[in-house]
Every structure is written in structure tokens, then in C-alpha cells.
Length: 559
Image (tube, rainbow, N blue to C red; front, side, top):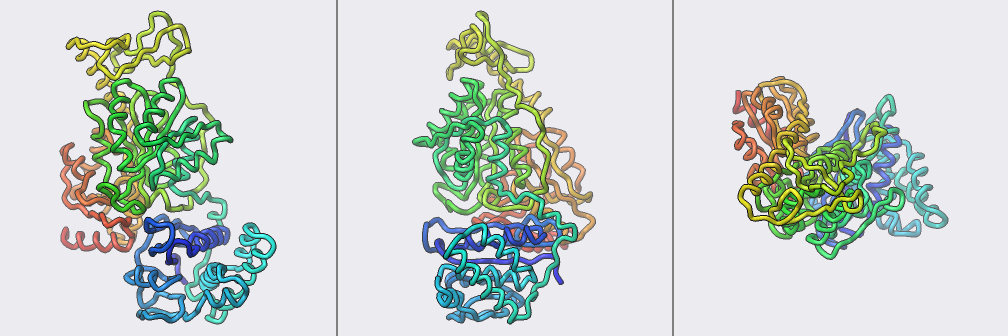
């Protein structure tokens, strides 16, 4: 009996890996298991070698393991691509080929079995039923799901495929990797959300009524999600001709009283640099969803990395406030996306919401959470004849009017400007307006989200964004009372209240999915001593077993 099992499906694009993932994740969830899934895929429509990992457990599980318990390679390339992830206890379900492994082999030609019942496409369904049976799960759940997806001939052949897969499992004694569902069956009532869906729902809750984007993986999912919901929630959707236009359209919407977001990745965000600076000067709010992937340039367009933190912090010429948020799971994606609109509106600044391919494309069991029944606050004033768009105020926030709401004239300008919004080269006015904009920082510090601390200890393992649950589970596996883990979801600007938590630790280890330790560098700029860094930049996320091993080595040295 086990409490967690990892299932890996591998194959080329077009072989139907997504179909197996959907069938299994829905089946596991309905059976009462906590479920997590994540993808690794190549940048091509067909071919290549892709994998989907599914973990199930009787307790919450929110992160991937590298080594797997069950592996279904749909072709020979998939086997070699994932060979390092196989152990001598891994069950490999595949026909004999020109490869060997120290593993438990199930010699089944799934494609031939599918052809025998009338359709080679349903080999995926046979594989899903076999995996379900090997885990001791009730096949009736899969039959229920298949009946929801298909009708007529496709339904009939898929039901036959389920019977074939279930029979193969029975031949092998069923329950080879037996696992019991959660005793309270709570996961059945949970949400099963990806990071992309969390961002989309959060944007809707934040009052988003306009999205303009140029498609760029892995951010495009939010664009398509909001497009699908556009009629239900009154969202105007524009696929712009490029990223520059997408950003400027969003600024125009905020100027006229709407709430806009644009979505992009590192290469597209680079093009938005002048727009970010324009947002800072005109004090027009803007929300950007920045889903990271490895660079430079095109890099690895379908893989993951946390390599754009410094880009987000420093993009745009000149000095002006901005906020950078980095959620660690779909619930935080929802909460921070909603908050991004409030912060942008309240402080008239750009807010950058950072994710990455791993978080965007991974699915988590998320306990249903309450959504406050309140309207988003619109920080807009009705103007009069004496209205001054950039009126000097002690806190740095000028009353924001919009065209047509009141009798005042709403002037904005990318040049330095007077209180009325007229171009100026007066040095005294420059100092006043620049100082006014920068004064917002003091109020922004009051909004800072305190890092999430798990456990107490003199050794702190620190991460930000999508590493949240990977670090947490890796630390739990080590069961070392000296270790605490600290997760940052508000990464810029950093305040004294956040840094105080780090100063309590005697030894600091920062974990990041990049090559240079960008967050560690930011901490050092604030006077925090970082003793060790664990970095990864190969295009994959960290894995729990991988990270726990690296931490274990460091802990031996600390002793």
C-alpha cells in the first residue's frame, strides 16, 4: 500500500497524450484521490517527444517527482526520452522493442489490441484502463467519463477499449501499485485548475473587461480562456498585430475608464518596454501577465524558467513605481490576478503578474475557496472645469479622471508635464512631478504581502513563484527540524516587513529556476546574506525528489 503514485505517459505530438491525461485525471479525482498533473512538450505540432506526469495521493499533492512508478511510452522515442526517470521498480507498459531496462515490463502492443477491436486510435483508452486497474481503481468511473465524451460508434469502441484494458490489469493481479482514496473523499468536491485558469478567473473577478494580446506561449492560454468567457462577462477581446500595439491598446482602455490586461512571454514583454515606461509617466494603470519561458531570444518556447524577474523589475527607461507579483499555485493565481487590477487602479502604475510554463500548464487539486461578494473599486473621480490630472498631492496619487465623466479636460502626456498635463521643460516642475510619482512607493509598501512561512528553523529555504509546493514537499521529505521554507508571492518592491523574516534565519538557501540567481541578487541588494543557491535552467521545473537530494547534500555540509 502506497500513499502516492506517479504515472508518466510519453509520446509524440498527435498521439493523444492529452486524451489519456484528461481521462485519468478526471477518473482519479472522481475516485477520491488528490491529483496533480504537469506537462513537458516540444515546440512542434506533430512529432518530437512529449510527456505528461500525473501524481495521485490520499493526501494533497501539488508537485512533480522525477522518478516514476508507472510509465506508458507510446513509441520508442518516448522510452529513450524518459529513460532516466525509470527505476527497477517502475512498471513499463509497452511492446518489446529495441530497448531494455531494469524495470517491470508489461509486454503489450496497445496499438494492435486497439486495431483488433476496430480502431487504432483507442489504444490510449486501453492504456488508461490498464493504469486505472493497476492502481486498484473502479473501472465504472472511466465508463462514466467516456459516456460523457462520446456517442454512437466512438462510444461503443471506447467502452470496448476500457474492457480490454481492465482485463489486462486483472491478468496482472490488479492493484500492483495499490493506493486508497482519501477517506473523506474530499477531492471529489475540489476544483481541478491550472495556473492559466486561475489567472483567467482572477482577471474576471478583478473586473477585467478588455484583453489585447499577441499570441505567445505559454501566455496564450489566458487569452483564449478570456475569449471563451467574453460573452458571459462582457470582455472585449483583441488579438493585436504585435505586442507593442497590444500594450498600447490596454493603456487606452485604462485611460478611458476600462480595466485591461495584456498577456505575453519574455520576448514579447521586451517589446513592451517603452509602453511600461509610458504607463509610468502618464500614470495610466496597466496589468501585464508575463508567463516565462527560457531565453534569450526564442530560447525554448514550450519549456519553463524563472529567468525574467530582472526584466520585470527593471524594464522601462526612467524611474517610476511598479509592482511585480508571482503566484505559486492556481489559488494564488486567482487571488493575485484579482489584486493586480486593484493595485494598478489604486496607484496608477503598471502591475506585472509573473508565471511560467510549468505553473501555467500544470493542474492542481484546489479546495473550493470563497470569492468575496464585492464590486471592484474604481478609483476614478468626476472632473470639473478646474480639474488637474497631475495635481500634486502629499501621497503622490493624483485624482484620476476619464474623458466624458464630468466637465474637465483630461490631458495625459508622455513628456514631462505640469499639473494640468501640459508639456514642460521646467526643472522645478520636473522635480515636483517626478517626486510625486516616486512618493507612491511609501503607500505601496503598506500593500506588501508577507511571505508564507512553513515551519520554524534556523535554516530557511527560500523560493518565489512556481517553486512554492516543490520546495514545501522537498522540505517535508527531509523531516529536518532545522529547516523552514519561505515563499514569496510579492517579489517587488520588497519591504522591511518581508526582509525581517529572512534576517531571523542563520542560514539562507535560495531555490530558483534560472541560471544566475536573480531573486538571490535582489535579496543581496537589500542587505540579506544568501549562503547557498540551488539553481536550474534546463527548461524543466524542479522535481521534489531531485530538490530533496540537493538539499540533503547541503544539509550535511552545514552540520
